[in-house]
Length: 195
Image (cartoon, rainbow, N blue to C red; front, side):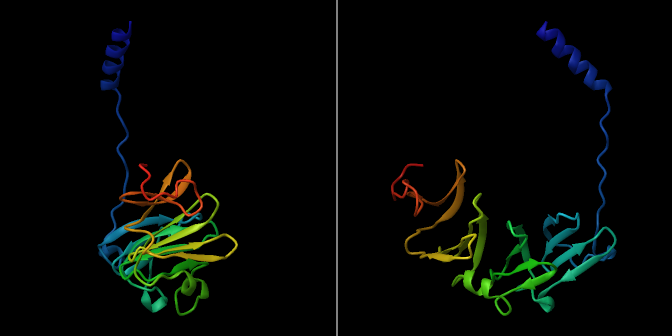
């Protein structure tokens, strides 16, 4: 019976036609300021942001609007955008200088005490938001800045975290290193833990 159903399903599927996917390709001829698009970020209102080597590009289904260092962006080459629980959209840039977009305004080290406080001593590589809304900023020198939902900021020195990376394991965030898992507030705070 199973063989019959499998054979029948395969024969039936050969007569069905799938829909052709629809897509639009945009280029610099359409107003895109660069042909290098690294990632796409969608706002809650449906507007698209493209990260490019020329800056951020906002697309509202009709026009492309460029936001770059002239508008306060810390670097024109933006690789990725990530939104936190408050609606701030943080940028990962080539220079690694920390900045974010909030209510159509760019906040950077020159106009935001928060950016000054969370910025590390080297290039920001990534940031992660835990389920409790704690935000972890990871920097190239292995320093990690922790921004708590209450606004308190804590730094973990790179000397304590050898080659770290932040990962989610079993719904918790851990600093991973090649010889084990480190979490300052968890029983797994052991340099030689096998996980």
